Length: 468
Ligand code: SAH
Image (cartoon, protein in one colour):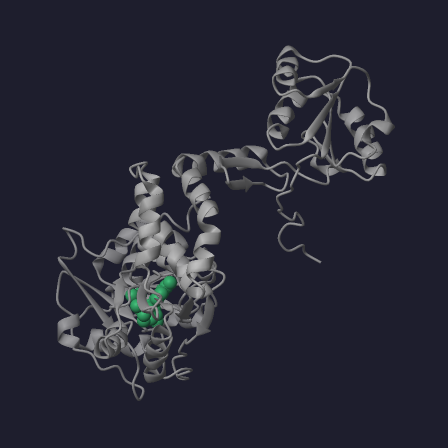
Protein backbone atom coordinates (compact mmCIF):
# COMPACT_ATOMS: atom_id res chain seq x y z
CA UNK A 1 0.00 0.00 0.00
CA UNK A 2 1.25 3.44 -0.84
CA UNK A 3 2.20 5.27 2.31
CA UNK A 4 0.19 8.38 3.13
CA UNK A 5 2.04 11.30 4.72
CA UNK A 6 4.91 10.82 7.12
CA UNK A 7 5.10 8.35 9.97
CA UNK A 8 6.86 10.95 12.04
CA UNK A 9 4.67 12.33 14.77
CA UNK A 10 5.70 15.85 15.78
CA UNK A 11 5.68 16.45 19.53
CA UNK A 12 7.48 18.71 21.98
CA UNK A 13 9.08 16.83 24.87
CA UNK A 14 9.60 18.24 28.34
CA UNK A 15 13.28 17.48 28.88
CA UNK A 16 13.55 19.05 32.32
CA UNK A 17 15.70 16.74 34.48
CA UNK A 18 15.92 14.04 31.78
CA UNK A 19 19.17 12.53 30.60
CA UNK A 20 20.50 12.74 27.05
CA UNK A 21 23.56 10.78 25.98
CA UNK A 22 25.57 12.25 23.13
CA UNK A 23 28.18 9.85 21.76
CA UNK A 24 31.00 11.41 19.74
CA UNK A 25 33.63 14.11 20.03
CA UNK A 26 34.05 15.47 16.49
CA UNK A 27 32.18 17.67 14.02
CA UNK A 28 28.95 15.60 14.07
CA UNK A 29 28.77 15.75 17.84
CA UNK A 30 29.49 19.50 17.79
CA UNK A 31 26.52 20.11 15.51
CA UNK A 32 24.22 17.93 17.59
CA UNK A 33 25.34 19.46 20.90
CA UNK A 34 24.19 22.89 19.72
CA UNK A 35 20.70 21.49 19.18
CA UNK A 36 20.52 19.66 22.51
CA UNK A 37 21.70 22.42 24.80
CA UNK A 38 19.25 24.81 26.43
CA UNK A 39 16.25 22.59 27.11
CA UNK A 40 16.91 21.65 30.71
CA UNK A 41 18.22 18.14 30.10
CA UNK A 42 21.25 16.62 31.77
CA UNK A 43 23.68 15.91 28.92
CA UNK A 44 26.45 13.27 29.00
CA UNK A 45 28.98 13.58 26.20
CA UNK A 46 30.83 10.30 25.74
CA UNK A 47 34.09 10.26 23.78
CA UNK A 48 37.76 9.65 24.59
CA UNK A 49 38.57 13.04 23.05
CA UNK A 50 36.61 16.19 22.27
CA UNK A 51 37.29 18.75 19.57
CA UNK A 52 38.25 22.16 20.82
CA UNK A 53 34.90 23.74 20.17
CA UNK A 54 32.95 20.85 21.71
CA UNK A 55 35.18 21.10 24.77
CA UNK A 56 34.32 24.79 24.99
CA UNK A 57 30.56 24.01 24.85
CA UNK A 58 30.96 21.34 27.51
CA UNK A 59 32.57 23.88 29.81
CA UNK A 60 30.23 26.73 29.05
CA UNK A 61 27.02 24.73 29.47
CA UNK A 62 28.29 22.40 32.18
CA UNK A 63 27.76 19.20 30.24
CA UNK A 64 29.15 16.00 31.70
CA UNK A 65 32.12 14.73 29.71
CA UNK A 66 32.67 10.98 30.07
CA UNK A 67 36.22 10.59 28.83
CA UNK A 68 36.28 7.11 27.29
CA UNK A 69 34.69 4.91 24.63
CA UNK A 70 30.95 4.29 25.02
CA UNK A 71 29.57 1.08 26.50
CA UNK A 72 26.05 -0.35 26.50
CA UNK A 73 25.45 0.43 30.16
CA UNK A 74 25.83 4.17 29.40
CA UNK A 75 22.33 4.18 27.95
CA UNK A 76 20.50 2.75 30.93
CA UNK A 77 17.99 5.25 32.27
CA UNK A 78 18.66 7.74 29.46
CA UNK A 79 15.76 9.22 27.55
CA UNK A 80 17.38 10.18 24.24
CA UNK A 81 20.61 8.93 22.72
CA UNK A 82 22.36 10.71 19.88
CA UNK A 83 24.87 8.61 17.93
CA UNK A 84 27.19 11.27 16.54
CA UNK A 85 30.55 9.63 16.15
CA UNK A 86 32.16 10.38 12.80
CA UNK A 87 32.10 6.71 11.84
CA UNK A 88 28.86 5.37 10.35
CA UNK A 89 29.50 1.77 11.42
CA UNK A 90 30.06 2.81 15.03
CA UNK A 91 26.82 4.78 14.92
CA UNK A 92 24.96 1.62 13.88
CA UNK A 93 26.35 -0.22 16.91
CA UNK A 94 25.56 2.69 19.26
CA UNK A 95 22.01 2.92 17.90
CA UNK A 96 21.46 -0.79 18.39
CA UNK A 97 22.71 -0.79 21.98
CA UNK A 98 20.69 2.32 22.84
CA UNK A 99 17.55 0.86 21.37
CA UNK A 100 18.07 -2.32 23.39
CA UNK A 101 18.26 -0.13 26.48
CA UNK A 102 14.83 1.30 25.56
CA UNK A 103 16.01 4.75 24.43
CA UNK A 104 14.92 6.87 21.48
CA UNK A 105 17.85 7.16 19.09
CA UNK A 106 19.02 9.75 16.62
CA UNK A 107 22.06 9.22 14.41
CA UNK A 108 23.79 12.02 12.56
CA UNK A 109 22.93 11.87 8.83
CA UNK A 110 21.61 8.31 9.21
CA UNK A 111 17.83 8.58 9.36
CA UNK A 112 17.53 4.86 8.58
CA UNK A 113 18.84 3.94 12.01
CA UNK A 114 17.14 6.83 13.85
CA UNK A 115 13.75 6.60 15.46
CA UNK A 116 13.55 10.28 16.31
CA UNK A 117 14.70 13.25 14.28
CA UNK A 118 15.85 16.63 15.53
CA UNK A 119 14.00 19.32 13.60
CA UNK A 120 15.36 22.69 12.52
CA UNK A 121 14.00 25.27 14.87
CA UNK A 122 12.69 28.81 14.68
CA UNK A 123 12.89 29.92 18.28
CA UNK A 124 10.53 32.60 19.49
CA UNK A 125 10.20 31.09 22.95
CA UNK A 126 7.69 30.28 24.20
CA UNK A 127 6.69 29.91 20.55
CA UNK A 128 8.66 27.21 18.76
CA UNK A 129 8.40 26.31 15.11
CA UNK A 130 10.00 22.99 14.28
CA UNK A 131 10.65 22.01 10.66
CA UNK A 132 11.46 18.53 9.47
CA UNK A 133 11.89 16.92 6.06
CA UNK A 134 11.32 13.51 7.69
CA UNK A 135 15.01 12.84 7.14
CA UNK A 136 14.84 13.27 3.37
CA UNK A 137 16.56 16.63 2.99
CA UNK A 138 18.03 18.48 5.95
CA UNK A 139 19.10 21.25 3.54
CA UNK A 140 15.53 21.84 2.41
CA UNK A 141 14.35 21.91 6.03
CA UNK A 142 17.06 24.44 6.88
CA UNK A 143 16.18 26.67 3.91
CA UNK A 144 12.55 26.65 4.93
CA UNK A 145 13.50 27.45 8.51
CA UNK A 146 15.56 30.39 7.33
CA UNK A 147 12.61 31.73 5.36
CA UNK A 148 10.26 31.48 8.31
CA UNK A 149 12.88 32.99 10.57
CA UNK A 150 13.34 36.00 8.29
CA UNK A 151 9.60 36.49 8.01
CA UNK A 152 8.69 36.33 11.72
CA UNK A 153 9.58 39.34 13.87
CA UNK A 154 11.58 38.41 16.96
CA UNK A 155 9.00 40.25 19.01
CA UNK A 156 6.70 37.23 18.58
CA UNK A 157 8.40 36.06 21.74
CA UNK A 158 6.87 39.02 23.54
CA UNK A 159 3.40 38.14 22.27
CA UNK A 160 3.89 34.57 23.46
CA UNK A 161 5.01 35.67 26.91
CA UNK A 162 2.13 38.09 27.19
CA UNK A 163 -0.39 35.39 26.29
CA UNK A 164 1.12 33.17 28.94
CA UNK A 165 0.99 35.89 31.60
CA UNK A 166 -2.64 36.76 30.94
CA UNK A 167 -4.11 33.34 30.27
CA UNK A 168 -5.65 32.85 33.69
CA UNK A 169 -6.74 36.46 34.09
CA UNK A 170 -8.63 36.37 30.78
CA UNK A 171 -10.11 32.96 31.45
CA UNK A 172 -11.64 34.42 34.62
CA UNK A 173 -12.97 37.62 33.03
CA UNK A 174 -14.34 36.14 29.80
CA UNK A 175 -16.24 32.98 30.61
CA UNK A 176 -17.51 32.04 27.16
CA UNK A 177 -14.80 30.16 25.24
CA UNK A 178 -15.82 31.44 21.83
CA UNK A 179 -15.79 35.04 23.05
CA UNK A 180 -12.50 34.37 24.73
CA UNK A 181 -10.96 32.97 21.55
CA UNK A 182 -12.24 35.94 19.58
CA UNK A 183 -10.88 38.31 22.23
CA UNK A 184 -7.44 36.75 21.87
CA UNK A 185 -7.60 36.81 18.11
CA UNK A 186 -8.66 40.44 18.05
CA UNK A 187 -5.96 41.28 20.56
CA UNK A 188 -3.12 39.45 18.86
CA UNK A 189 -4.26 40.29 15.32
CA UNK A 190 -5.33 43.80 16.13
CA UNK A 191 -3.70 47.12 16.89
CA UNK A 192 -2.36 46.10 20.28
CA UNK A 193 -0.71 43.00 18.85
CA UNK A 194 0.73 45.08 16.03
CA UNK A 195 2.21 47.61 18.47
CA UNK A 196 3.78 44.84 20.53
CA UNK A 197 5.25 43.27 17.39
CA UNK A 198 6.72 46.60 16.39
CA UNK A 199 8.16 47.00 19.88
CA UNK A 200 6.25 50.27 20.19
CA UNK A 201 4.18 49.55 23.25
CA UNK A 202 5.85 50.56 26.47
CA UNK A 203 3.03 49.87 28.87
CA UNK A 204 1.68 46.58 27.64
CA UNK A 205 0.01 45.56 30.89
CA UNK A 206 -1.98 48.74 31.24
CA UNK A 207 -3.16 48.53 27.63
CA UNK A 208 -4.20 44.94 28.11
CA UNK A 209 -6.10 45.62 31.32
CA UNK A 210 -7.96 48.33 29.44
CA UNK A 211 -8.81 45.95 26.59
CA UNK A 212 -10.22 43.47 29.12
CA UNK A 213 -12.28 46.20 30.81
CA UNK A 214 -13.64 47.41 27.48
CA UNK A 215 -14.60 43.96 26.32
CA UNK A 216 -18.35 44.12 26.72
CA UNK A 217 -19.16 40.41 26.64
CA UNK A 218 -22.11 41.09 24.37
CA UNK A 219 -23.17 38.76 21.60
CA UNK A 220 -20.38 38.79 19.03
CA UNK A 221 -21.11 40.26 15.63
CA UNK A 222 -20.66 37.81 12.87
CA UNK A 223 -19.21 38.83 9.56
CA UNK A 224 -19.17 37.39 6.07
CA UNK A 225 -16.02 37.33 3.96
CA UNK A 226 -16.86 36.94 0.29
CA UNK A 227 -13.54 35.74 -1.04
CA UNK A 228 -12.35 34.97 -4.55
CA UNK A 229 -10.11 31.90 -4.49
CA UNK A 230 -8.80 32.33 -8.02
CA UNK A 231 -8.85 29.69 -10.75
CA UNK A 232 -7.15 26.87 -8.84
CA UNK A 233 -3.42 27.37 -8.24
CA UNK A 234 -3.16 28.29 -4.51
CA UNK A 235 -0.19 30.56 -5.27
CA UNK A 236 -2.66 32.95 -6.90
CA UNK A 237 -4.51 33.68 -3.65
CA UNK A 238 -4.17 37.18 -2.24
CA UNK A 239 -2.67 37.78 1.22
CA UNK A 240 -6.02 39.02 2.46
CA UNK A 241 -7.82 35.96 1.11
CA UNK A 242 -5.37 33.70 2.92
CA UNK A 243 -5.62 35.63 6.19
CA UNK A 244 -9.43 35.48 6.21
CA UNK A 245 -9.38 31.82 5.18
CA UNK A 246 -7.28 31.11 8.23
CA UNK A 247 -9.43 32.93 10.74
CA UNK A 248 -12.95 31.88 9.70
CA UNK A 249 -15.28 29.74 11.84
CA UNK A 250 -17.25 28.26 8.96
CA UNK A 251 -16.68 28.04 5.21
CA UNK A 252 -19.27 27.70 2.44
CA UNK A 253 -17.47 26.57 -0.71
CA UNK A 254 -18.12 25.70 -4.32
CA UNK A 255 -17.16 22.89 -6.64
CA UNK A 256 -14.70 25.23 -8.35
CA UNK A 257 -12.56 25.76 -5.26
CA UNK A 258 -9.60 23.43 -5.72
CA UNK A 259 -8.47 20.91 -3.10
CA UNK A 260 -5.08 22.54 -2.50
CA UNK A 261 -6.91 25.77 -1.73
CA UNK A 262 -9.34 24.11 0.67
CA UNK A 263 -6.31 22.68 2.46
CA UNK A 264 -5.34 26.24 3.41
CA UNK A 265 -8.63 26.97 5.20
CA UNK A 266 -8.55 26.94 9.00
CA UNK A 267 -8.71 23.22 9.74
CA UNK A 268 -10.98 23.81 12.73
CA UNK A 269 -13.60 25.59 10.61
CA UNK A 270 -16.86 23.87 9.78
CA UNK A 271 -16.88 23.06 6.05
CA UNK A 272 -20.14 23.29 4.13
CA UNK A 273 -20.25 22.28 0.46
CA UNK A 274 -22.80 24.33 -1.44
CA UNK A 275 -21.57 23.59 -4.95
CA UNK A 276 -23.84 23.63 -7.88
CA UNK A 277 -23.62 21.14 -10.70
CA UNK A 278 -24.69 22.68 -14.00
CA UNK A 279 -27.93 20.75 -14.30
CA UNK A 280 -28.27 19.74 -10.70
CA UNK A 281 -28.63 22.70 -8.38
CA UNK A 282 -27.35 21.05 -5.20
CA UNK A 283 -28.10 23.99 -2.94
CA UNK A 284 -30.42 26.68 -4.35
CA UNK A 285 -29.04 30.22 -4.32
CA UNK A 286 -31.67 31.39 -1.83
CA UNK A 287 -30.59 28.70 0.64
CA UNK A 288 -26.97 29.81 0.33
CA UNK A 289 -28.00 33.39 0.97
CA UNK A 290 -29.93 32.43 4.06
CA UNK A 291 -27.19 30.09 5.32
CA UNK A 292 -24.80 33.04 5.23
CA UNK A 293 -27.25 35.10 7.27
CA UNK A 294 -27.90 32.35 9.82
CA UNK A 295 -24.22 31.65 10.48
CA UNK A 296 -23.31 35.34 10.71
CA UNK A 297 -26.23 35.95 13.10
CA UNK A 298 -24.84 33.21 15.32
CA UNK A 299 -21.71 35.35 15.71
CA UNK A 300 -19.53 33.36 13.35
CA UNK A 301 -16.98 34.60 10.86
CA UNK A 302 -18.31 33.11 7.67
CA UNK A 303 -16.05 32.54 4.71
CA UNK A 304 -17.91 32.40 1.42
CA UNK A 305 -15.21 31.02 -0.82
CA UNK A 306 -15.75 31.16 -4.56
CA UNK A 307 -13.74 30.13 -7.59
CA UNK A 308 -12.12 32.97 -9.52
CA UNK A 309 -13.46 36.40 -8.69
CA UNK A 310 -16.73 36.64 -6.75
CA UNK A 311 -18.06 39.46 -8.93
CA UNK A 312 -17.44 37.77 -12.27
CA UNK A 313 -20.11 35.20 -13.11
CA UNK A 314 -20.02 34.30 -9.44
CA UNK A 315 -23.36 35.55 -8.12
CA UNK A 316 -21.36 37.34 -5.46
CA UNK A 317 -23.55 40.39 -5.91
CA UNK A 318 -26.72 38.47 -5.12
CA UNK A 319 -25.25 37.00 -1.97
CA UNK A 320 -24.16 40.27 -0.47
CA UNK A 321 -27.39 42.00 -1.48
CA UNK A 322 -29.11 39.75 1.03
CA UNK A 323 -26.47 40.53 3.66
CA UNK A 324 -26.75 44.26 3.05
CA UNK A 325 -30.54 44.06 3.38
CA UNK A 326 -30.16 42.18 6.68
CA UNK A 327 -27.56 44.61 8.02
CA UNK A 328 -24.82 41.98 8.33
CA UNK A 329 -21.26 43.25 7.93
CA UNK A 330 -19.31 41.81 5.02
CA UNK A 331 -16.18 42.37 3.01
CA UNK A 332 -15.34 41.32 -0.53
CA UNK A 333 -11.92 40.07 -1.59
CA UNK A 334 -11.25 39.96 -5.32
CA UNK A 335 -9.72 36.86 -6.86
CA UNK A 336 -7.91 36.17 -10.10
CA UNK A 337 -10.73 35.48 -12.53
CA UNK A 338 -10.52 32.42 -14.79
CA UNK A 339 -9.97 34.61 -17.87
CA UNK A 340 -6.87 36.24 -16.37
CA UNK A 341 -5.52 33.04 -14.82
CA UNK A 342 -6.08 30.81 -17.86
CA UNK A 343 -4.80 33.42 -20.32
CA UNK A 344 -1.57 33.91 -18.37
CA UNK A 345 -0.93 30.21 -17.85
CA UNK A 346 -1.77 29.43 -21.50
CA UNK A 347 0.55 32.14 -22.85
CA UNK A 348 -2.31 34.06 -24.53
CA UNK A 349 -2.26 37.81 -23.76
CA UNK A 350 -5.89 39.00 -23.72
CA UNK A 351 -4.96 42.32 -25.28
CA UNK A 352 -2.06 43.13 -27.57
CA UNK A 353 -1.26 46.31 -29.47
CA UNK A 354 -1.25 44.47 -32.80
CA UNK A 355 -4.20 42.14 -32.26
CA UNK A 356 -6.79 43.26 -29.75
CA UNK A 357 -7.66 46.58 -28.17
CA UNK A 358 -10.60 45.26 -26.18
CA UNK A 359 -11.64 42.13 -24.42
CA UNK A 360 -15.12 40.82 -23.70
CA UNK A 361 -16.09 38.33 -20.97
CA UNK A 362 -19.36 36.49 -21.68
CA UNK A 363 -21.13 33.39 -20.47
CA UNK A 364 -21.84 30.65 -22.99
CA UNK A 365 -24.30 28.86 -20.79
CA UNK A 366 -26.82 26.86 -22.85
CA UNK A 367 -30.49 27.50 -22.29
CA UNK A 368 -32.91 25.13 -24.03
CA UNK A 369 -30.11 23.98 -26.36
CA UNK A 370 -29.16 27.44 -27.62
CA UNK A 371 -26.81 30.19 -26.59
CA UNK A 372 -28.28 33.61 -26.27
CA UNK A 373 -25.52 36.13 -26.99
CA UNK A 374 -25.18 39.42 -28.81
CA UNK A 375 -23.41 37.85 -31.82
CA UNK A 376 -22.70 41.07 -33.79
CA UNK A 377 -20.91 42.46 -30.70
CA UNK A 378 -18.77 39.32 -30.46
CA UNK A 379 -17.57 39.48 -34.04
CA UNK A 380 -16.01 42.94 -33.94
CA UNK A 381 -12.48 43.28 -35.26
CA UNK A 382 -9.43 43.67 -32.99
CA UNK A 383 -11.16 42.13 -30.00
CA UNK A 384 -10.67 39.10 -27.77
CA UNK A 385 -13.72 37.22 -26.54
CA UNK A 386 -13.54 35.03 -23.44
CA UNK A 387 -16.39 32.61 -22.87
CA UNK A 388 -17.08 31.18 -19.42
CA UNK A 389 -19.23 28.05 -19.09
CA UNK A 390 -19.05 27.46 -22.83
CA UNK A 391 -17.95 23.83 -23.27
CA UNK A 392 -21.36 22.40 -24.01
CA UNK A 393 -22.31 25.27 -26.29
CA UNK A 394 -18.98 25.25 -28.19
CA UNK A 395 -20.31 23.90 -31.52
CA UNK A 396 -23.23 26.38 -31.51
CA UNK A 397 -20.93 29.25 -30.54
CA UNK A 398 -18.49 28.53 -33.38
CA UNK A 399 -21.30 28.18 -35.95
CA UNK A 400 -22.92 31.42 -34.88
CA UNK A 401 -19.67 33.37 -34.96
CA UNK A 402 -18.99 32.18 -38.53
CA UNK A 403 -22.57 32.93 -39.52
CA UNK A 404 -22.17 36.46 -38.13
CA UNK A 405 -19.08 37.17 -40.18
CA UNK A 406 -15.93 35.82 -38.51
CA UNK A 407 -13.70 33.75 -40.83
CA UNK A 408 -13.79 30.00 -40.31
CA UNK A 409 -10.02 30.21 -39.79
CA UNK A 410 -10.36 32.62 -36.82
CA UNK A 411 -8.15 31.38 -33.95
CA UNK A 412 -9.76 29.90 -30.85
CA UNK A 413 -8.44 28.05 -27.79
CA UNK A 414 -9.98 26.04 -25.00
CA UNK A 415 -8.22 25.89 -21.62
CA UNK A 416 -9.18 23.00 -19.39
CA UNK A 417 -8.43 23.06 -15.65
CA UNK A 418 -6.48 26.26 -16.10
CA UNK A 419 -3.59 27.07 -13.73
CA UNK A 420 -3.71 23.59 -12.19
CA UNK A 421 -0.92 21.10 -12.79
CA UNK A 422 -3.09 19.16 -15.24
CA UNK A 423 -3.97 22.19 -17.34
CA UNK A 424 -4.64 21.31 -20.99
CA UNK A 425 -4.89 23.77 -23.85
CA UNK A 426 -6.21 22.96 -27.31
CA UNK A 427 -5.96 25.55 -30.06
CA UNK A 428 -7.62 25.52 -33.46
CA UNK A 429 -9.99 27.54 -35.61
CA UNK A 430 -13.71 28.19 -35.36
CA UNK A 431 -14.05 25.50 -37.97
CA UNK A 432 -11.87 22.86 -36.38
CA UNK A 433 -12.02 23.24 -32.60
CA UNK A 434 -15.39 21.58 -31.85
CA UNK A 435 -14.21 18.35 -33.52
CA UNK A 436 -10.79 18.52 -31.87
CA UNK A 437 -12.45 18.89 -28.47
CA UNK A 438 -14.95 16.10 -29.14
CA UNK A 439 -12.08 13.78 -30.09
CA UNK A 440 -9.95 14.69 -27.08
CA UNK A 441 -10.10 12.82 -23.81
CA UNK A 442 -8.11 15.38 -21.88
CA UNK A 443 -10.70 18.17 -21.85
CA UNK A 444 -12.24 18.22 -18.39
CA UNK A 445 -14.35 20.84 -16.64
CA UNK A 446 -13.87 23.62 -15.84
CA UNK A 447 -13.00 24.97 -19.26
CA UNK A 448 -12.61 28.44 -20.66
CA UNK A 449 -12.78 29.48 -24.31
CA UNK A 450 -10.62 32.27 -25.72
CA UNK A 451 -11.35 33.59 -29.22
CA UNK A 452 -9.25 36.06 -31.19
CA UNK A 453 -5.99 36.62 -33.04
CA UNK A 454 -4.12 36.73 -29.71
CA UNK A 455 -4.53 32.94 -29.54
CA UNK A 456 -1.85 32.59 -32.24
CA UNK A 457 0.71 34.16 -29.85
CA UNK A 458 0.62 31.01 -27.73
CA UNK A 459 2.92 29.33 -30.23
CA UNK A 460 5.68 31.64 -29.01
CA UNK A 461 4.53 32.40 -25.47
CA UNK A 462 3.41 29.05 -24.01
CA UNK A 463 5.41 28.43 -20.84
CA UNK A 464 3.39 26.53 -18.29
CA UNK A 465 2.90 23.06 -19.80
CA UNK A 466 6.26 23.23 -21.55
CA UNK A 467 8.24 23.45 -18.32
CA UNK A 468 10.51 20.49 -17.76
N1 SAH B 1 -16.22 33.53 -10.64
C1 SAH B 1 -15.48 32.67 -11.53
C2 SAH B 1 -16.33 32.12 -12.66
C3 SAH B 1 -17.43 31.23 -12.21
S1 SAH B 1 -18.34 30.60 -13.56
C4 SAH B 1 -14.27 33.42 -12.07
O1 SAH B 1 -14.14 34.62 -11.88
O2 SAH B 1 -13.41 32.77 -12.67
C5 SAH B 1 -17.57 29.04 -13.81
C6 SAH B 1 -16.78 29.03 -15.09
O3 SAH B 1 -15.52 29.67 -14.89
C7 SAH B 1 -16.42 27.65 -15.57
O4 SAH B 1 -17.50 27.04 -16.25
C8 SAH B 1 -15.27 27.95 -16.49
O5 SAH B 1 -15.72 28.47 -17.70
C9 SAH B 1 -14.57 29.07 -15.75
N2 SAH B 1 -13.45 28.58 -14.92
C10 SAH B 1 -13.30 28.70 -13.62
N3 SAH B 1 -12.13 28.17 -13.20
C11 SAH B 1 -11.53 27.69 -14.30
C12 SAH B 1 -10.30 27.01 -14.55
N4 SAH B 1 -9.45 26.72 -13.55
N5 SAH B 1 -10.00 26.66 -15.81
C13 SAH B 1 -10.83 26.94 -16.83
N6 SAH B 1 -12.02 27.57 -16.66
C14 SAH B 1 -12.36 27.95 -15.42
